[in-house]
Image (cartoon, rainbow, N blue to C red; front, top):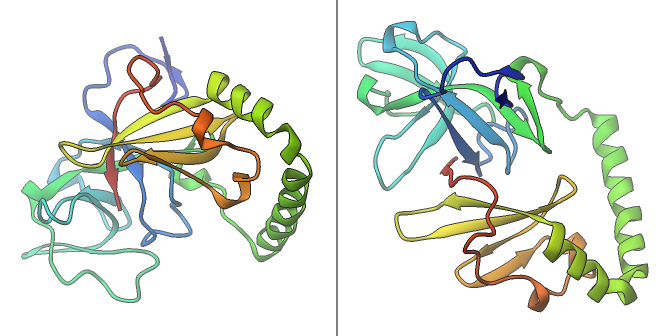
Length: 218
């Protein structure tokens, strides 16, 4: 069976790897919202400075994804790449969920070393392209019912666990994240709103979700 996490073929079940949906901003620009993280179990003694680990200080705070700065007698000192200061609370061995080994972005898996990062030129180009795309989407508004029907039929739904009682469903079409369904409502990204009539999108997902439920991390 093809193993998308390791870009190879499985020889045994990946029991020590689980997937997380990243929704924070503390690890930008390395990690971005809507990235999917492959997290592998790691022994405490094998953790090194520079590793990106997933840990949970409390149930209220949920999963946190930060980089290891140092290891101290009090525990592991961590920091988000985009945060000005290191984390105040040291991470204990029992609080560690695992180490991030790969990241899925736009339908493709990357190692942490090969993740595409935005440059000043690419960011400017992307902003210009988004303006052109928005103009084109507005012009295509008369086709909204047909386009929404195609998205509802061929779009890919993925479910994510937000809490023990709440699920979040994400809608992708041709590898592009369009929006999410949460608390009984669709929330479409502003740039795609001219094209999508949420009344035509499903509100019941039994048997339609194509992937497993994943936890979230920030």
